[in-house]
Length: 174
Image (tube, rainbow, N blue to C red):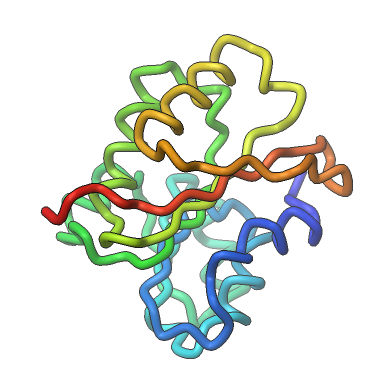
């Protein structure tokens, strides 16, 4: 199911209105959060969506012609486009609890490499997946990469209910 408006609002609250920052959306799917991101941006040409599903990619390009969408994974897109430390905001809707711990780490490393110092990262985890081993693995990795990550109250107006993680990249300059 697409993310609800309530979840979308919670996910984009770290992206300032009128921002001229670079925003990377990882796994935009059908674009349920994309519209909220683009409406907050002062310059939509600084938006990049990375979607590995060809059907979703085609839908996104039709639905949001002003956005840039890559048919790729975050790992290969970040390497191919040299985005090291360039994004001020990364918003991610990947299904973390369906990934192995190794894949979770690989994707988080790519996201961290993309973020500029002080850049923000927002993602979510469905509430019912939180207690599964893969959900616990993800929470542990989030706090490993982002020690100050904050977990939102439950977004009950989403199906299924979700928790949003907001974090700021504060590692030493690269």
